[in-house]
Image: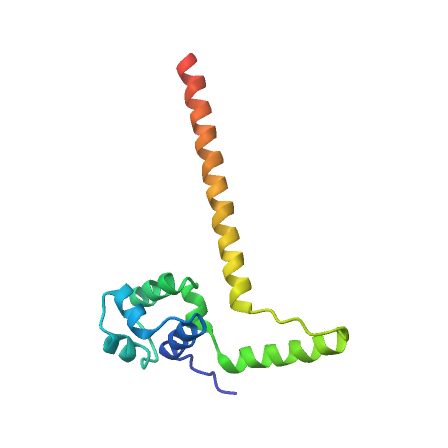
Length: 133
């Protein structure tokens, strides 16, 4: 079995389209022309700095773009659908995996912010204790 090559540019296009973002909008965010984004989406391998910038704008991890394989995703969805249809005879639930992923990312951001706030409060408390001595 040969290893399948991941086409990063095509994956950028897929994520961009799934998120409803137009090429010219992505181009403006990147400071590029629409044609440059079109060329970027034609590249099999994208420079890691540009890929990171694109990922931040699309609000998806760069690893998702690097590793997304449509055949594998369709296979997982197909297998999950058949299993869910068999197990859940009451009905089918439609869950958008991108939406769930973004929800998890947002939750992680909130937890990280809470941890930072708690750390700052502890530092302030320790500084007050030191000032009293």
